[in-house]
Length: 584
Image (cartoon, rainbow, N blue to C red; front, top):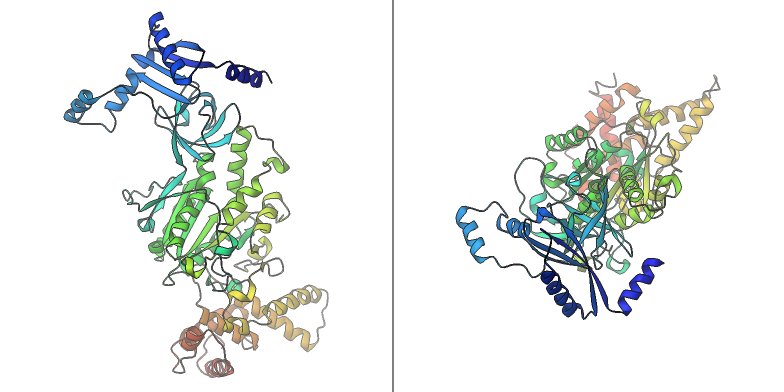
């Protein structure tokens, strides 16, 4: 209240307060001259100067009036002359042409600093999300706007920014450089390359924070985005423009599903962005090397904020990745973006919020953590054709603790996304990989993002798997089973075995349809489980070259007619009755 009263008092009486830092004790006539200039500039009746001697300025003075900074110090002149390590001739020219600056950008001064978060006084017109520059060259972003001060998170140079450091506005919102040259590269959240391959030529600059497209700018999701994973494409299909959550405990294969999905986009025209948040640098390097080894880096960009990076860098990483994705979407391209993972992103934001002294809520997360992720994921969509027809498909990853999907962050992201793929530790440890829990997983887009062939081939797959799970638990307590029950159990085991899929071996849509036709007609039931996948895989590879051209027709038309089903089953019967060595 005292501060509010004093502000009103000074404003009503046209009294201006200013801070003056001088290299040496100023003379009275100098102080009077400065007061006259400030009175004239601000139409003030009186000027109160707070004078401090600062020998580091070398000469001259720095005057701060509100959010305006007048820097006529020797240090400022020297910094301007030495900018960019000039040659002797350039330096001579700069000295000859130098004129004292009347004023620099609006500025302020640091009043507290700690753990990468600083509080700044002044800069009354700074806005949320604006980039600011400190006198030592460090950069930060305005994250909190309060009546008396600003909360700024630092991207670099945290150890060199202390109380009294000058800070100036840039007038520029936080963003990253964008362009086609970023494909195949590994960058940090500020858009700087960190793969040792030299600078990247940018074609533009996109803000990291941007309002999501409105409902009238979007169109419905109806084009499949195949992951190449049979368990997902058959039961929980993903469409271009969809947001499908991958959720599960640590070490259950979440990143592997995302990596396989990226590999499967080869030659489809879909560009990929992998955002790594708070992971070990070695883990990010391994994923990058796997992508490179399988030829996926040609159409992929990796945005990396490692566990050793500051919380502010981890916080802006997914927004930076989305800004790059929006650049490609604006050119009419389809993009797949993976956020790995949003649990660590929420933890980074929690650290920033607590340092900014925002009130903690449930599980110590700030109250706006839901908005944090919703404004990120809402930017993934499919645009109307007359607006380019581009799309961003998001695969956010969230880590659970002991399978608890009712925790704060999991429930938040589940309610934002269009479905989730739940990975279960028990299934993973039992060798069912990918360890997809059929009961808890769902796609809210469903059959709209499937081809007609896929819908027809897997019509009863989820029901049969659910029946098998129920029957399996029942059969544990019974020693004598009738023939029908044994047949259903055998069929269920064949389905479970079919859904197992090794890493980095995505299947095409036509291959998946052939597998599903064989399974739904019981063709795989008689095979020993340990030989089932080898036999079916061998058959599919041979059937691809079949003279009937069945798989090519499925690929071209996206349909599965009775003639194709008969061709698949007849070919299997010939294969199983002939040289099927795996069945022997």
